[in-house]
Amino acid sequence: MQFCALIVDSLRHALDRKLFWILVAITVLVTLMMLSIGFEGGKVSLFFGLVEAEVDSYDPLAASGKARLVGVVIYGLMDFFLGWVGITLVIIATAGLFPAMMESGVIDVVLSKPISRPVLFLYKYLASMVFVLIQAVLFVGFTFLVMGLRWGVWVPGYLLCIPLLVLLFSYVYCVSVLVAVLTRSTLAVILISLGAWVVFSGVRQAPAIFDTFPELQKHHVTHQVVRAVSWIPPKTADVTYLAAKWSNAGTSLDIIPASAMEDVSAAERGQLERSNQWEKEQLEISAFSSIGSSLLFEVFVVLLAMWKFTRMDF
Image (tube, rainbow, N blue to C red; front, side, top):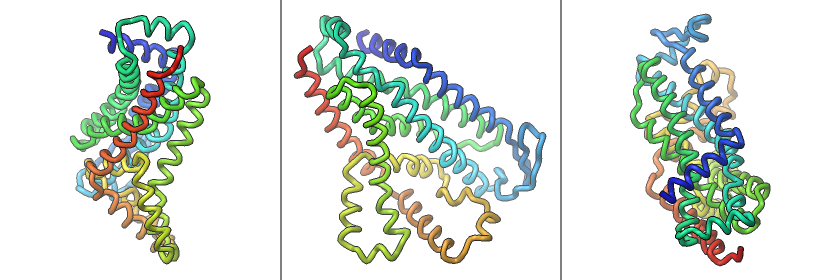
């Protein structure tokens, strides 16, 4: 009952900020956009048949066409709308949950209930995940049904994007909670959490720079240090690749039509091929090692925040 009450309180706080409905509107917009696209043989129709074009490479009846369609959804829609836009809005929506709970008067009422501080902390932390779970279920569920019912492409592995998106948020939210406990400032939570997310993504992608540009590989020691450091923070960048792997979506370059590559110079083509090879290596990465090492970092930060919370004077 206490956990349910905290979930309701967290959702009410998020709903008051209207960001929940903004994310729902984005999901509905993306769903309608996908519904307006149809495929028949080598033709693609846009805006419910108002515009038609010959696009053989996106024929959903072919295996390569299915992979490309799912790749567009994962790399183009899920990674952007729920990866960058969505997570940014969710961070803003949930940033005030812990600071609001620790306000004078509110925390006195909460602590007067028969619940220990560590349990209260964990319940509040997990309750925040429900907000993201709802958004993930809506987005992945709707897009999954559109791909199946409208395009005839059923990809059960795509549904695993739901827990992956919750994991992605949790990787950043652990930092939000620690900052909230240390500062009690909603603004600080937003700024530092977004900064941490950029750092996490940048550190994880840093080895790709060495792999894409061979001239940098002569700095062997630096290359190895960068690779080692990239395993310390949460692997936020791996979430998209794991989603693509489980959905058999290929790499991000696979969704680019062959005609768009015709005018690419030899040097640029070589760089793209090396980047594509690096992505293929990422698709083979172990989910156990990626998620496991990320959760170790998250658990450490959460325990640190919990320890600080239990020792605070209110």
